[in-house]
Image 1: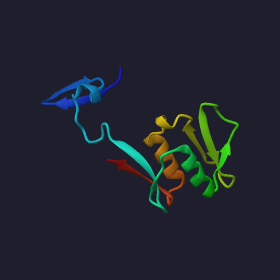
Image 2: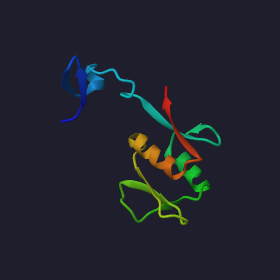
Image 3: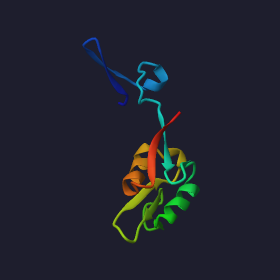
Image 4: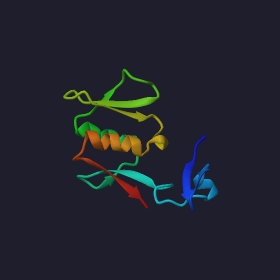
Length: 112
């Protein structure tokens, strides 16, 4: 069971598929994020552009992992970035992982 719990007039209820039913209109639902490379202000729009940026920051492809993932590691650290092979599944969870491991190079912003 998935959805969003809504509290209204002292009553709490579960709204399933809130984007489809129109039952919930919160700022965070349906909002898309974009990963921005700070030195150029470029929004990352594909894995090929992301890989080029990560390589310039010292990240290398890691091929010993899961075949459903694209992974990168740095020789100078124990960090590993794991991304879904399908770019359409690249969401804010993966974006923030990249930001945490490259804090001065990336930022996640709302896409309007």
